[in-house]
Length: 100
Figure: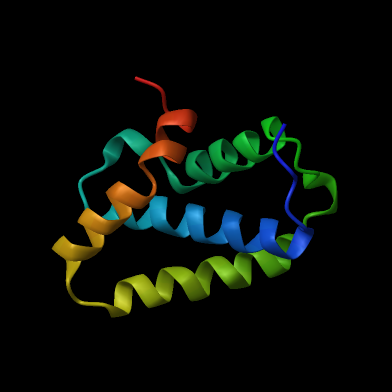
């Protein structure tokens, strides 16, 4: 069984995954990912299946970190490169969340 990361790392992983998937939906023609709330719920559900304790998740901190990650992605104007990198980086996670 995998070791559960500490809460601070969980927060960073959740924020970066949700931000990356949202960017893919908004800029990379990934309509298969659903609405923002669907992405959030799917990623949190996957974290719960991995044994992460979402009951103690600080929603305010998560929202702040998501905004920072998303802002960094949007500020990089090379959309094609962002799409390629995010599709590769998130492939395993998105396959777990959205099996085809």
